[in-house]
Amino acid sequence: MEITSFPTHQHYTETPIPWLRKIPRNWKVFPNGRLFQQRKEVNSPDLPILEVSLKTGVTVRDFDNSKRKQMMTDHSLYKIARKNDIAYNTMRMWQGAVGVVPVDGLISPAYVIVRPKPNTESRYYAYLFRTQIYMNEVNKYSHGIVEDRNRLYWSEFKQMPSPLPPIEEQTAIADFLDHKTTLINDFIARKERLIELLQEQKRVIINQAVTKEIDPDVRLKPSGVDWLGDIPEHWEVKKLKTFADFINRGIAPDYVDSGTIKVINQATFSKGYFDFSDVRYHRGDNLANNRGAVQKDDILLASTGGGVLGKVALFSEQDKNYMADSHVTIIRDSKKRFVPEYIYYILSINFDLINGRLAQGSTNQTELQREWLRSFLFPLPNISEQKEIVVHIQTSSHILDNAIAKSNQEITLIKEYREALIAEAVTGKIDVRGWRKQREKAA
Image (cartoon, rainbow, N blue to C red):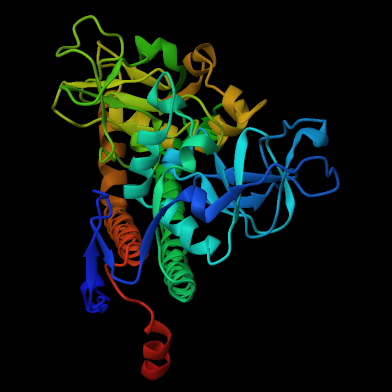
């Protein structure tokens, strides 16, 4: 359904707030201090520990399955959050780390907890606060030495203006968005599961090609490497450092709002493809003598962070104005002793090995050790065979690649629709008060 298919309100009134522009005539605008009150309760050690994340909002922390084991031992310092409060991460509110508290619990003293006043529906405001237009405003009200460390304290949050629809409409909007986002999230989850299955099929094709060659009758020998098993008799097993002369991290960027030099970080390729939609820039206009400069056919490896570490990409852009940040390792060889696609494919099927081998300590401390990578063992046929294997993989996985690309595109489009739908609903650009009756009538 197109957003334009939803009805609009009959009458609107202009506001002096640029990001809001106009609102339905029966809506008002107030500073958040009129809508919420800060909660400062402490000293209740028997409640569950809550956390606030960019992806899921406020949830009960699962210590059994979480890589983040650290927590304060003195629970008396934790703040008490009550069900239906709103909690936000002061350092990540500008990125959407905010949500409705699902149950009474304890939350880090570094976070802010606000209690809704009468005629304030928390779910409606949680949707509003996570829209891009509102997060942009949050950034303006936040303070920090650099953007990534910006903090939004209660003293600034309470001054921020927010629309106030009638309570009945707040509830209707929240119900509507709960329903729609559940359907959309289910669709995304199914597509992501499909992508996982397709990628697993592709990994089987790659694994067969790079460990058993493409000739089923070839004579094999033990490789001496656990993950490899047997390999063709005429192949070698070599450490990466013996056939790649550049295995280095990029550099820490000097970020600017716009420029010539684009920065590649782990998020740029963590989805399995390059996504430059949120590209940032490094100060300067050339990359001479810059160790982080990225060249065509470079292999890029995510080198920090649990769950992402080990993600790999092959850089195929002709543009020379790209650099990798210090969380990305660049692999290349000036002597052309390997086919980049071949080494990329081997690394792509070893994500679990690399991530699991190095996932020690906290998420923030997990990183790829350069010497470990330099000593990683690869099955290495001659260049001609490497090229044949690459062609075989690309031919055999062509249909899978197309299906993966189509699914990723569908996910991108539905996410854009979801964000637009939420923004239009919470700012009153569409009228969803009658959505439930329309749904019942259609059924």
